[in-house]
Image 1 (cartoon, rainbow, N blue to C red):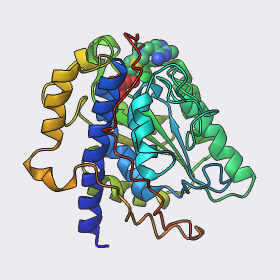
Image 2: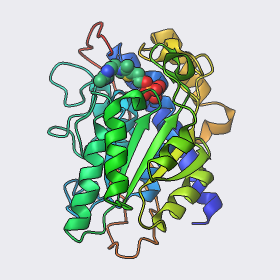
Image 3: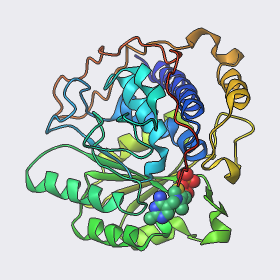
Length: 325
Ligand SMILES: Cc1ncc(C[n+]2csc(CCOP(=O)(O)OP(=O)(O)O)c2C)c(N)n1
């Protein structure tokens, strides 16, 4: 597959994941669309190219790890995992229902492919540092990725983790900052200004890269580059748009933690299945070539295990209300 084809394939995957996110939230009647949609392209690149994972063996000791530190973006993670073959896609519509393993925030004890339970903001990076350090101590070659929110990094614990990561030189760790500029109550700049972001992280000893977080090629390139970085943890500041892909949600803090109703979901799904995209409604994504150049990786790369469940199944018992934190 050429780089151009790979980029097109990832863009197609991301559109499918965005549709799933909308369908899940509509069915659940609660959840977080804004920060899920801003993260979809990043998750697509990680789960459909970058990471060494095996959906048939989610606990594989040598797998790359992923920590969704901004755990409220669980719908995007669940969509990536299901489309990647970790569990059936029709399960996505059980989001936030009583008895479902797809809780509002990810639960590592219940969901195949979830490496860490998250939701309390600020904690995930510390866990990721520990995973990366453990990998080094055990002589493993796995890499660890953590996705942070730009409001989340208001938390002091993030900066303790940042110090520790640089101190222990965990160059097998890549943190990705979903820099959509908004948090629950409005713009970061108004709530708690963290600029200048790059200078801060560099001062903490990190290798920092800035990219457009919706540009697949840029994301592929920067992740490739960070694999070569030695002696420092890597931070990707990914400029993103909260609510990306749905016109009436884009750049609106109001869409942080509110689910679309039936009519809004219909409009969103039509936009996400626009003229650019009429050919790929609910495809099964069976042909992903994942990263080939990770030297020590074995052949867990022929990911053809994706089920063909359509996410448009009827959803039965829908959870009423819900209060997204
Ligand atoms: C410790 C903690 N405090 C508060 C919350 C409630 N909360 C959930 S999401 C959120 C805003 C996060 O903003 P950001 O990290 O920018 O997320 P994004 O915009 O990417 O969705 C808050 C305050 C929480 N989950 N954990």
